[in-house]
Length: 470
Image (cartoon, rainbow, N blue to C red; front, side, top):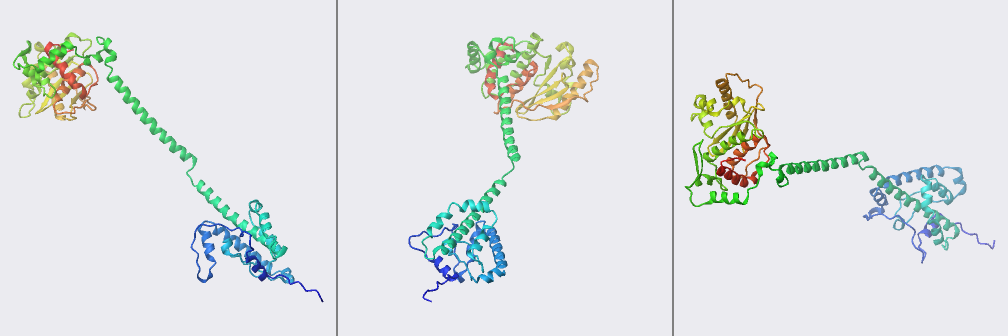
């Protein structure tokens, strides 16, 4: 009777004790979330759940809460709970301390609650994570006024808090893994890499081809010792100092009416005024063009083994072939190619060159008997199919008249030569035209460009002064 019966701790006193913060002890561990706006109206506890859902762990946590509630409800109806008489109403961890979800578990003792929590999924991960801090949490509450029972309860709650933290971290890991898995597959990355290498290799191939073309086109100085034997080098033989002085005097001398050279067979006199059309920026005249084409024909006679058999019409032939009314007139030029006059028939030639003058622009047409085609070369990229049709008709009439043969042109082609060296000024069309004839008569490709024109002007002047094409 003298003993005072010790009052059994109730759930309410347990809640008050756990909410009391002993002096000198650190706060319970809590789940750290990003900044969020707390909803204070009606004391809502759903704001915590919404913040968890915002960072990707609300769905997993809610599934854990629902599972706990269903387990608690089944245990509440058991006979063992009615025998104990323990009335545990609500376990509420302060939201300011833990920020965990509101979990309502009724009719459970602490030991049963502990066993319940230990039955969660991913037990191994939770135990590994919680084992580092569980002893520290028990040591922090060992001097709590609640004694051993409250100490055990706080330890259990600490384990639950750690489990909640682990769930959040597991969700973060899952999200990171999903992001990694959403990357493009390895074979696609390899395919993209191979495409980049293909582009690099194609650009390198293009650079190699351009370099090879430059080397093959401009092998001039390296072949100086073999100039007499290499035909490809002959069109670019540099002038000597004496030749440079002679050409300079002819082009820039003061006496413009001085006769510099006379071609007897053509009966052409070349004065300094006429030759000065070869100065930079000058337009070539008929006298210079016709004399140069005659020199090309004479070159063939000197070196038939190196030069194709060609015929060169002068600048007046095409104007006679189509008169001022643009009518085809074979009779006007029928005698130009008499056997007694030129010494051969056109059908026996490899190529026939026809200069065509279009008001202020020079072009070249070629009857390519060797390759069975009619070609048109314009340094400005122009095309004239009518001129090629006129020449085709003339060639048929010429062969019929001189050789009494019928020529079938059904297999011949018309070609507007593409990739020609193009002029980049308004005065070099005549120079391009005569150099087209020069290179084609040698059987060479047109391996020159606008930069060679100053040299070709001097070279042409030198060859006219010497009456000899090289």
